[in-house]
Length: 478
Image 1: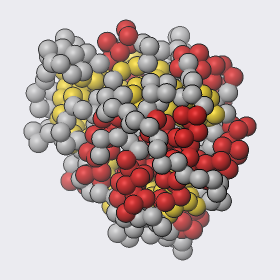
Image 2: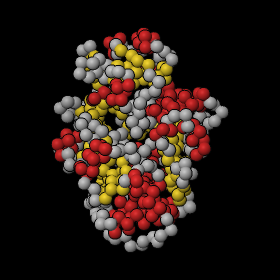
Image 3: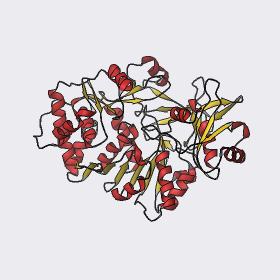
């Protein structure tokens, strides 16, 4: 496979009648998805979209999103999928920077769906195909700058990442992959690609599924694979503890986006017989950096796994010199999975994607970590996750893990200090702030414990299911 759209057309030939993508109201087969892809590709070409153009799609996750992604790939345009709640200034920023040839807005979603999946003819001649070096997508991701930046990926970079990840995760044709993550989030989007590579079925949920309906939806979908972030896994763990009578047939849980609390995995394994876990580490800028073997976390607690096949991960010091085993430094990714850089951000690209002495860029991840003698990666925390408290360097991730070990605490998040305001610990659970801070002394050094703690009903989440620390600071009065 050298082009992204090859996935859906190949799947349609091999498994035409198998369900490809579904929501709670709609299911389309691979044959139907391929036909919709061809119709949309023809429509894009007729509307003047050409190779090298950008197409922005703003709407809910569903079969139309999948067809649009593959259709843009077929005509050689770079797609940019945005969550339907991206409006106002954030949307204006994307449109101003990406300069799309076409925008498919939320209010046109229904009409576009009917045209794509309707009874119209399927064009056979879609014109010349793009080259593997052509850009295929722009994915906007938050970072250290004030406005989101778009990571540019070429056809060959995306296809390499898909095959490398697939070779380690091993999705199966009979799998039902439950994805509660939006398709604007690359972890969610790649579930479409990994499933299409083997003819599996992707059941699209919603970010709100990290709540009371999650267990019910998993059982109803008969899901065998769950693409999770910690908030989703934590929600499932709580629901299973409350109701052990409904057990989904999950065989595999994957995780990326943030470190998974070990106690959550312990509870999930106890509640779902036969469940296996594969932890991962990655960024949009390289899609995936490392993947653990199934249940590898039991043998190497704290590790995020080995580098993808055909790539390498290593650590460097502040001067960019490679470090040895067990030496903590910045994690760097090198290989065909490293994307091209940031759209129209040459200075930011040069800083994060240095070429050094090689011809191909490396990725400075912004994460601290180390490798053991066998090449397994251990992530200590993001450079921006490290803050100073009382003159000492502290990891927010370490503090949060310690707080979760306190009896009565279900969830925890740290708001790092800013503008003279000290660090704040927010927890969800039955313990009082004083009890949490007192009991944490048995878990970590006292100088690492924030001086302020609040109990909140829930942790606010971003659309990608990660803790929204900015909103948390606002709701907690920090």
